[in-house]
Length: 318
View (cartoon, rainbow, N blue to C red):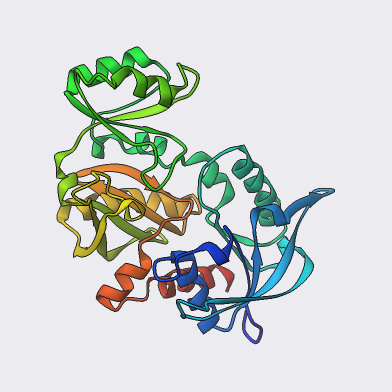
């Protein structure tokens, strides 16, 4: 790429609606701007296939680190996605059929020459909840089922459990349930849609009180610090959007062990940027769609995590 600006595309939710102080996609864009990349902005509805060729309606994007005025969009042009050097897929869940259709378009862009971060096929294969099954030795007891009866039996076995949908994000529709809870049936009915949808149940890990730890993995390598999201007294969920407080910490030996096992598998499957969620000593989720936490860690520790990401990107484009 010597002698020419790298052409970067990003697929994301509307940039006007982000929280710039916290948004990891903006952190990526700011680093791309520092490197003088040409940035093309897309929302999900801007992408299409025409006779097998992936296209997008691109707008030129400029970004600044200003909480009141962080972006400017200019123009609108038909862009062959495969002509871009790299595309960041940063569309938030829900992971629904529209998301999957979008990954098919990005598959074609990849085949036509663009590096997609993260690889579209891996976004489909690595559901953020279900993919923990590939690393079950690191996880708390976990059940994925459509059976309401199995969820009730799981609760009876473990006394207190966490039940959540497979396609959510940000702590939405997550329930803590104790054995004998009068809401058990309605929670199981709601999350499985009366046995028509899969849901996840995990044994409750009391260490959530000390924080749900987000471990950033870039190109298979674990970053030196993690973000512990400590639940508020009013809400037991370790999610920043639900009021949790982010605290930067060093990784424990167990955190390193988990990341050292999972990270290379992600890298080998084209996942350059991921967030592992660990409660206590247990892996609970593997986030590959649009992991967050970068801005908080950079502020607390003076790191430049997106710089490491784009170093990895540029090594693949060389």
